Amino acid sequence: MPYLSAGRLRSFGLGRVLVLFVLVFTAFALVLFVQLRPDYLHPTEIGTDVSTYFGAGQRLISGREIYAMSPGDRPMPIWPPFWTVPLVAPPTVAVLWAPLVAFLPPILSIYGWWLAAFAATAATYMWIVTRGNAPVVIAAALLSFATIITGLTGNVNGLLIGGLSAVWFLSRGPRTGPRDVAIGVILAFATALKFGPAVFGLWLLAERRWRAAAAAAVGGIVIAGLTVLVAGPDIVPTYLHVAGDAATAGVTAQSVGGMLRSLGLPEVVVVAAPAGVIVLSGVLAFAFRRRPGVAFSIVAIGATFALPVVRYETLSFLLVALVPWTRALRGSPSAVGVAK
Image 1 (cartoon, rainbow, N blue to C red):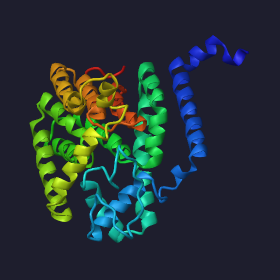
Image 2: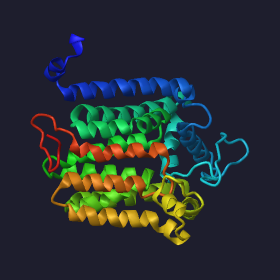
Image 3: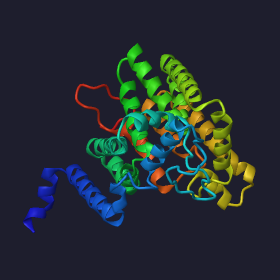
């Protein structure tokens, strides 16, 4: 078959062949997922991630408990023992959704969020596949199924993947005040929506980005204050109780704690596992502080596993760890460890 000769493949470029193969493979996988789970294309249906966020916003503006169901509330799936409440995310998610519920038609707010999360996930995946070297492209392909699930469900992780990838690109330019503030604000919002990204604060300290760290701290305080102001002071002990349940009874098999539990280690070790991941990530980030790309990837991996609840689709968060190893655009600054 002359059209598939080795010479033709070399002239086209083996790297391009690999990228094309991964893109076609991902497209087929996407079609397969949609056929197997057509409900993924209908985020307004009960039980979807976006529907869960919408319901939390509804309960908040109606003056009802965010973490409890009342008669007349939008039905929410419960999956004991992993979660026994209608929302396990921080209350900031409900506060963010409150104005969307109040001022936008449900179909617009739900589909708008869903499309934004899908676009952020897809854009990051496409960048990595088209700008990475062979090992990076293969790693992205291994994450393709988890990435597709994250993108199609509209999970908040999709937005975080895009936002944290933007943090890396912002950090590669000159250390100006606006850049550092943008980095800090993004990390503050990301942490308010999910605890894992807090690990990136250690990366800021390792890189001595003091302005960005200060912006993240101030942003976090402001967001926390607004959350308490809108949701009420009782939301703090309520969420701590929910988080405590997740850290014990809600530990999943894919989390570090779940793996340690399967090995028969004491429960105290299982509960402490996320803290151990955070400490280890910080130590390694400081050890590799002269290689920003390596340090960033380390904390991205730490942010993925610094949680008691890790499911298969959570692994899509590892895309963030691949971003530093992609080629920069022509004329853009590169970083230590970036793929050539």
